[in-house]
Length: 452
Image (cartoon, rainbow, N blue to C red; front, side):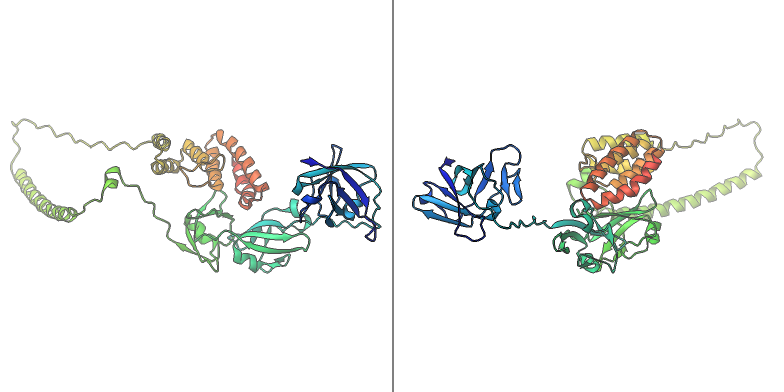
């Protein structure tokens, strides 16, 4: 940056006072059409001049006038500068666009008769919102950014907020509400599309948890007695789990059949298309074989009856050696694997990358109430250091249900995991995550009571 001799003069040609001429010697030939000026004083604290006085950060002022005067460049600054710089202050004035600066001892500039510095304008703030299954609109907590005009936690039908009514927000389903703190007006911004299908299942609190299908990040929870997108809570709770199809205009749901879980084909089946032409001949063979077996069985029964009648008429031969009765042998039933063995096989499959097989085995061990399986699944599905694999996305509500069952089974490790999950949920809620806040207030409290 080039340093040039600099003078400051009172601009008396303008009424009201408070105008200063900065004269940069030798910069006339290099003057530009659009320039800005920054002013800095020689102190460590608040060195830069801003609209409200000396401040920590740099601020660029737009001159009232820029003109050439022979070989010099004249920059006229208005009351927003002249009214704030005290006499005998050493100031460095910089023209960033020309990469030039100068140092001057500020004095002799008339102060303006009245200085009105407008307060800095507060920028608009965006607040996330979401339509709850019960029909209310939920907002993230924005009291730290909006103060008293922050939205309430929920908005019911028929209510309005800062010029926006409930119906307008409901049409958006999910998105952001942009609030202008100056005009006290708001407007909804379109956000994520509603999921076409929603999976629901019961949780440990007796309520229902919901999540969107096909990559949707929609999640919500419903308490006892609340409606679920127009459906009765009791009907869904009685079914336990299932799938809802959401109408995209009215956001009313209908119950559909749950998706069928496809079991992956074995390796020989996966390599090529199977030929089922042999099935019909096999069925014919089975039917014929069954008929022949039935006739032979009837004939055998008739013959056995005749032999019994003859034996009854013929006295037994006392001299005949006794024939020992044939020992009745009961075939041994195959041993069913224990929950511990199923769990161990599931963990091994998971570690080897066989996610589908591992999930089926671990769920089987979970249904048998195997405590290590409960804890293992909870750690895989919660949002603490979540990695896709066994599950496509985290589900803290399901994790809390598994942790609660693990605690009830006496696993002390689950208590520490629940405490760690609380820290993660609190951080999310502080960042404005609505579902995290609801989980903290509901399912987490229930689980912590079980894990005490």
